[in-house]
Amino acid sequence: MADSLSNPGFPEMLPEALELAREKAPSNRAPEDTVPMISFNHVSMWFGDHKVLDNVTFKVNRGETLCILGRSGVGKSVALRILMGFLRPQVGSILVNGEEINGLSEEGMQEVRKHITMVFQNGALFDSLTVRENVAFPLRERGGLDEDQVQQIVERLIGMVGAEDVEDDLPASLSTGRRRAVAIARALAAQPEVVLYDEPTTMVDPLIARRLGDIIQRLKHQLGFTSIVVTHDMRFAERLADVVLFLHQGRSTFFGPLAAFMASTDPQIQQFLTLDAYVLPSA
Image (cartoon, rainbow, N blue to C red; front, side, top):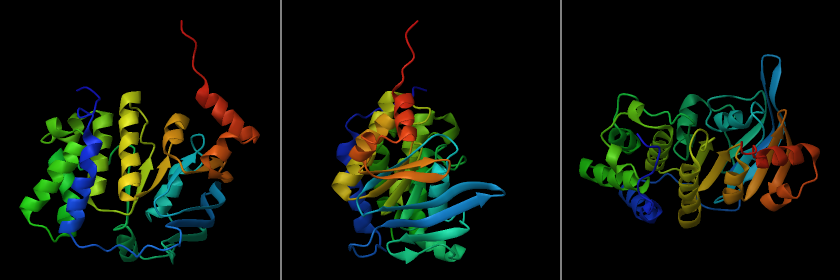
């Protein structure tokens, strides 16, 4: 199956789909204020003798997009898994909307996950459920909707990511780009405040990467979503980032605005930017 999103006009459907979901289901959103939505404070984590994160500090304000950059194996995805409560750091404080989450019970983390959702590299879709059923799952879990309302929201979210032609297919039959797009639709059905994206452009072509970027941008500009995007793709980050966190050997060597990152004279950052820009010569 072709690795494409078939509806180039899909972003126009986004606000209507998401606002319908919010109108029909109860909201557990915290009040907006000046407290950062996400804060990492001096977070360190080891796997055995290997220090994966070393005294990492950053914050993300409500409505911002943070891109976490760095080479493979520097702890980028680990930071997302800590935010979801899948991993617990040995040192440091993690705040979500001003409340400490490090050390919460699993029950407490379930409450946090009502506000934060994650789009995994592989999509993490339920293999035995169709595309339509995957997207409907969070709506049914949350409750408060009748089946007609669930199906109306699902149709609009599936249309938003251009997956109407595969809505009755199982995930195993989908291309990488399609699985990731469906995973975003399912994440949005959960009505989160924060969406975490783990390498969304890995193994997809530039057209798909651009359209996935369009979704993330529209979520931010029209609905005020907060996003954290782990990526090695500097071009993708340039389109999305308000702020950048650069990790090198588990340490945060830069945190600040995108423009300042691009202008940095730090040797590790310059090497990263140079390698990212390198294009193999034609034969």
